[in-house]
Image 1 (cartoon, rainbow, N blue to C red):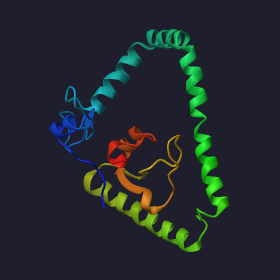
Image 2 (cartoon, rainbow, N blue to C red; image 1 turned 120 degrees about the vertical axis):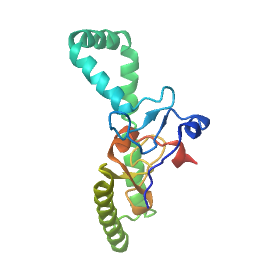
Image 3 (cartoon, one colour; image 1 turned 60 degrees about the horizontal axis):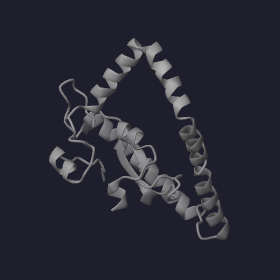
Length: 177
């Protein structure tokens, strides 16, 4: 089953979302999420940003240095926070040792491998049909401060690669509901 969340701008705005995905290409041909605020294609925005950064590399580098200097405490706090991912790994190992999580069960491993292989085949088929690269995504992130998701077939979905890269381990409102 394909879990691409196609949603209209109106519905996304009603849900308080900042982005929406219609599956239709923009004027420049990008099939990407759109901004609810200004209906702009995010791929087009990224292209403009890349061009601006290339044209203004020195000014951008100076601004980044000054910004990091001004917000030194924020970057220190972020560094400490990002190490919280290690806690989720430790919790998972603890569950495995306690016997409440048995990921080494041969039946579990065989089902996982078969279903992952099937999802990867589906991803290739979807790519052939749509021209968009798809990936197997963990619905609940494997490593996060809030939760510890698992690498098993009940926690997988197929989504476009670009959406998966944007998600970056964040739990969306769809998974929280």
